[in-house]
Image (spheres, helix red, strand yellow):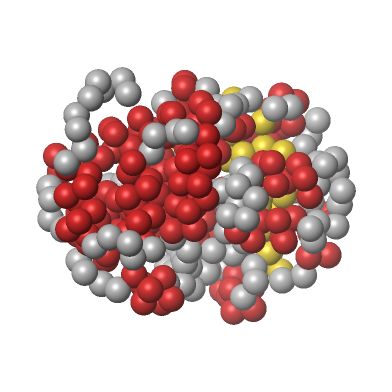
Length: 329
């Protein structure tokens, strides 16, 4: 199986960075964007000044806002926000199009992982998941990056990996789609908690503790959803968690920092151009955890804070007053 012509669905920072990867060597790549300003700028000046300002893009990238232009692609890299994934996939012009899901989250209404949504909407399409520790601006400028590509169909997975693998974009293959997805979804919520700690000036020790205990919650949830521990301990789980919880380049971490500094949560969510997916994932993640009896106190605490049931001081006091137990629990 050969995959050559790629279409990237989503003209934000991450979608643009993936188009840059796909276009290396002058290979024709299509980039679908909702905003006409993005389409015009990519085609005329080879730059995305709204989401990835200052980075020159490969001229082989051709932007469009017309879905019918994507029918000639051999595969789609779908980078739309998780809560819009279903609506975007319904617009697919090709019933058998291989889909590589590159967004991170869980569908709020259904509680489904995104690969489950894709199988439901496009039942004849092969589905893969691309996840890992990736800041878009670093990927777009060619800095070293390693990612997980999860696909149940090995032939399709190998073809996708051959197409996007680069010396500076190392792609590691697994068949554990659920494990790869869970890591990318859960880490966004935990990054908000780490950002709150940073905004409150609680220090590096506190952040390290939150990452470690949050990782324990990620493993519990991931195994319950059918994922494997070794996948969660890899790039798409622990690797992504550490990166997202350590830098204001992370939308979710920066949201947490602003909350920790006392800014109004409703105003922050309303004024953000880019999506902090953890704010949308927290309610459904907490709901599934309660339904399945999975202990996830950090996730529950972040949700309480986002929905105004506790104040920051009360939240931190609750977390710090939890009775210590065995570290394996």
